[in-house]
Length: 70
Image (cartoon, rainbow, N blue to C red):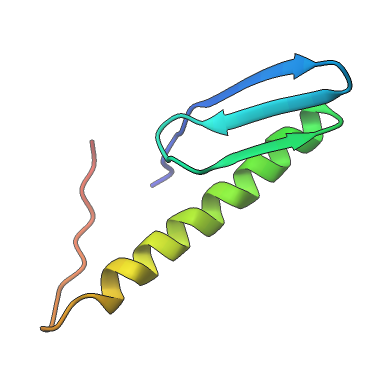
């Protein structure tokens, strides 16, 4: 199942600047809109993976991973 996130972007001078509204800290800037969207996606995937690793490393007991659709 593919999850959708919201990128908020704008153009200022020579830069495209944007961030993912749902995940704090995922923000980027690039020279082109296309590059910005690519970089945001890569950064988002990295942030999600780091968050998952952090959550798993804090568990002291056995745990189960369950997908929840919203």
